[in-house]
Each structure stands twice: as structure tokens, then as C-alpha cells.
Image 1 (cartoon, rainbow, N blue to C red):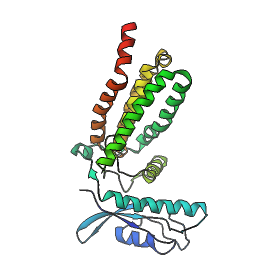
Image 2 (tube, rainbow, N blue to C red):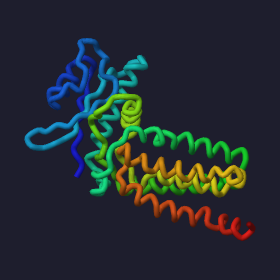
Image 3 (cartoon, one colour):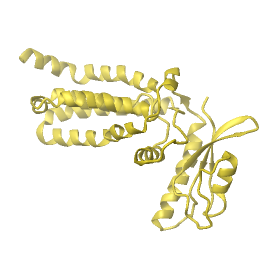
Image 4 (cartoon, rainbow, N blue to C red):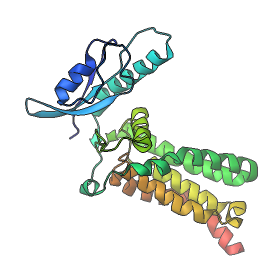
Length: 266
């Protein structure tokens, strides 16, 4: 069962951060008389009458403002409200093995490589391998589309994200930015794993890339990105385990016939 989320929402400089610190018992949010000090969402753990819940401090909401900073703060508050609505009604993706996997902030670097690598592969195939692009896009379309459809039918999420960090540096800053931009829902199966499988198979499928032996770069890099999803607590290991057979099924649908032909003509 997931923990309930309580979001503190209101206009700027009305005492939201002070209330957040009081309820969490820690000085996690900065308290100043100047409006607009809290800009991102800040998470904390609370307990009230024996029941634990996650508390979210948000920046102030100013309806109808044209100020870019205030618009950004309002967006953070809206995300916190949306998380409150979503997290009451999802199945929690979890295995006991998740508790043995440590959080490692350094893995946010390979995690962040996923989007640009997908884009670069699309761009390369668009100019140099039209047939390979069709197979790559079919794999991506079936994999991502099927995952989204599954999440719509069977809402899921995970409660593994840390709410506090022992160190504060560039790596934890990136982790916090990812957490702020992406909710912890719709995680099963892991689209990162499916995307990494698509990248690796596209490298093996493309003759120009094979000649440069880039498939042997894509394979360990893909495995590193898959590992990063659980090490930065964006996914449960269950999300990865479920995505593996999905990726294998997609291989047989999209690439198996092509690879068999390539072996016969080699």
C-alpha cells in the first residue's frame, strides 16, 4: 500500500514552508519573509495520529500571473496536486530485492543519456538507413505504446525515491530535477529498458553501425542505463524484470526475420 501524499498549496509568503518544517520536525524548507523563496517541490516524511504520509511543500500560486518564475512555481504546485490525485489509486511495483539495491546518485548521468541517445539514433537512421528506421520506429511504437496502454488499464507506481539526500552536489541536483519533472507513476514495464533494447538492436541491424562495431558500445551502455533506473530509484527491479520479456517479444515481432536473413546471407 502506498503512502498518502499531502501537498501544502497556497499563495506566496503565507507560511507554507514554516508549516512544512513544523510537521516534518526538520528545517528542510527555507523560511524567509520574501515571497518566492520556495520554487521547487520539497518532500518530507510525516506521521499524524500513528499514520505515516509524505508531505510536499510547494511554491506559492499566483493565478493569472505572467511572471515566468511565478508561472514555474505554480506549475510545481500543480504537479504536487496531480501527484496527490494519482498516488491514491495505483498498484505499487515492489520486490524485496529493491531494499537491497542502494541509491547511487552518480548513476543519474547514464540515466539522463537515454533521451538524447534515442533522438540521435532516430536522426542517424533517418539519413543513413531508411529501412532500419522503419524497424526501429515500429519497435519503439509498439513498446512505448503498449506500455502506456498497460498503465492506463493497470495504473502502477513505486514508492522508492529518497526524500532526503546525505550529499548535496551536481548529481543530487540532477536527481531532484528528474524527480520534479517526472512523477513516480506509470513505471511498469520500464520504458527505459525497452528503449535500450531498441537502441542496441538498431545498432546490430544497421550495417554502417556494425562496420564501426558500435553495437558493442551500445550493448554495455544500454545495460548501464537499465541499471541506473533502479540505482537512482526511478524504477523497481520488478519494472526491469517485466520489461525484459516484453523486449524479447518485440524482438521476434520486429527484428527476428531480418536478423535471420542477415545470418543466411553472411
